[in-house]
Image (cartoon, rainbow, N blue to C red; front, side, top):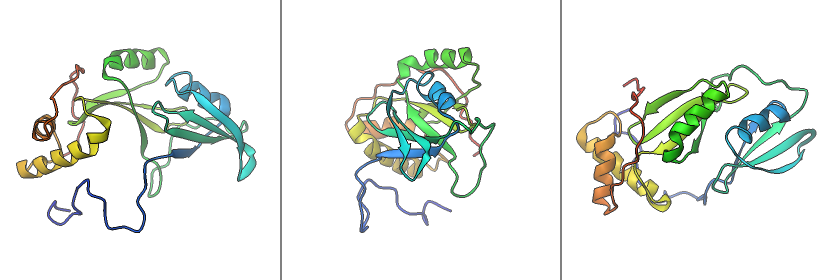
Length: 204
């Protein structure tokens, strides 16, 4: 699909009957409680803030984790389910979950993953830096650090501006120059974080 025929990229609210106000939580079918807590609380450092029965199926437990900004990730778990080796791909399936991390903790995060015996890949995605690993069930987990300092309430505006600059540039994907240009155009300071060199890992 060409950019000309695609839906416009903009921060303006669409003409829709409903407008969401944010992400409240995401719920994943988990394996068992011990393995889930070991990965999300003990390795990724997400506080376990609520545990209760799954109200639709009380034979399962519903775990609630704070991802770091008050937004919640939850799991339905049962002690009779062992952790799995991988996920099934397909329409409607979850491709990956992405969580924000602080740029100055990037090296420590890679070291922690190595110590925990977790494999990982590091990519420079043009607009951010990403570490990819897997949870106890083989679900792909992305740990993302912004390459530039961007106020949370301006992120959508910066990305939409970078998208326009990318289209004008004829580039296949948003790159450093588009992010810098977007920040400059919007009058925001261009403060680049010190992140390791990495391949883009793109297929375009």
